[in-house]
Length: 357
Image 1: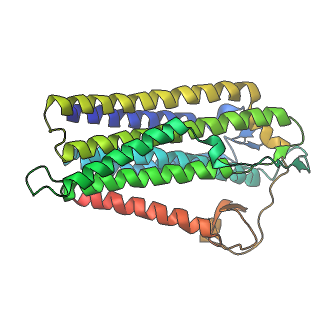
Image 2 (image 1 turned 90 degrees about the horizontal axis):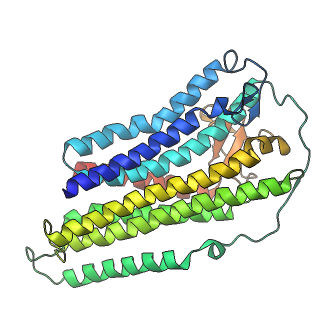
């Protein structure tokens, strides 16, 4: 029964990913024949000059699924159901980041293929001087619950270390899932910090519309990050309680814990969908895609580009991602780039370690 609850939750996470894929898949056509994502294009672009670009866009969106589906199936067929749940949770985070980057990249590519902007664009923007601090976007009750779960998990480990083998002591089988969940906690916290500190210029026109959309966009992502961190902390505590036999596997208490965790994950998914629906209401009213034309066109950065324009080494550019002639490029001259490369490499290492056990 508990395996069934785990698999249902993993399937729900996969369904959320498919729903997001469906939404992003249709974005190039969403705003009519004259728009390709955020780029204004001539009539017939989707069927003529942009047809190849559209195919590459769709193939790039499918790439994360092509990479994670074999791993997920391997874990499922080998009976590692809890690992399937972790893998789908991580895949949901990674594919959401990849999806956003793909939309920006192909917006620039479409603008280049179409020969630039069809209409004059503004030459100036406003700069917001309002401070952006992580503590201003922190829910203290969420942080308190997460801290309580982590403290209780630490107490379980500390108490259990003195038990002899075979008397409920934690063994090495607990290490991979604990590492997964702590690593996910770190990643979501890093993402939250990036989104809070991410400064966007304000358009000279429709400033209030942009600020309204920006606030709704930021609130959606921060709520999802906090909901994910809260879910991970609860799962970590339940995992250690069962592994240490504080709650015995197969007992009524273990079943109740699994039900609570399963309901918690389903609640998180429904919560994320509700927050997405709220953001969609604002997007329908503001039409943020039209706000893209309220900003000056970002010039192609000057400097050395590698790997067909996907990588660059530009010390004078403070951003991790910069515009290239091919779309966007990863700036290898910024230390933050290596922080995220290291984090993602660790994520892959954990996935391989889990699969090999």
